Length: 333
Ligand SMILES: [Zn+2]
Image: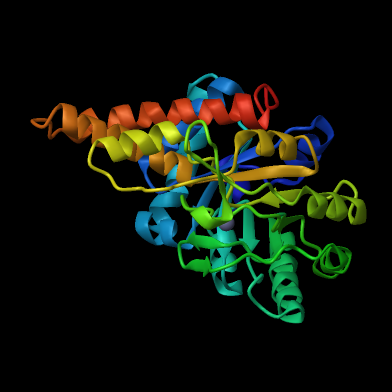
């Protein structure tokens, strides 16, 4: 058993309580490799922003579970080295799909886990989430549950359509499971193709797609049922068009990739939404930077020469999200 406390990590309890009170959201950035982790930690340390290092099942298999634990521990030490005296860093399992996986993460230094039973019948979701909560709370690990189904693809989690969270279910779910936060579905979506062109309108001036608005009425109804309860938004990348354009210009093919407008996320961050998940945007930043270098310098074959600039681009992106979208800068001095 490796406790997250020994790794210098924290759980989400106090972090979320402060975020709701302060009207901002904590960024949850997914990572799979060293460059992403460096960029996340540098951005968070310089911005003094609490941060959630988020790892999916696929990322854990990709990076190796043991190596990952040491990377998280190293992230805390690196943050201190960068002058962040009291780093507020969470290591979180994204979309845990079984009790066994959640237990394995808890036993190996994770400070927070998500159990995603949203695809199950309601009573089975309750039972599975409660089982994970009962185990996690023994070790002071926090648990995120999910109600409602998001559209899109994330790792092995995929769905053709979304089903908004039913606000009538949230009190019962939170009380019976004892979960610490709840991911809800209000129209955000996984991946870089969050909406089909048919679901969007076109801006007559630019010809760009404009996505349908998020269902803030569902969020409002959930907040009314569970005042002050931490709410999580998945699938909240904005799919910056400048990255999509660079990728397409330099040999990529991402037609009609579209995300959630940042002004909608800014609005959500001021509410009980205290964790916003961003993954695709950093993938796009990295890919755009690498594609451009491969085009501009075809003779380059030192990975540091293309992964280094990709890392810098991700750092810029993370800082932008922290400062301009989530408002979490300066909240973890
Ligand atoms: Zn997700």
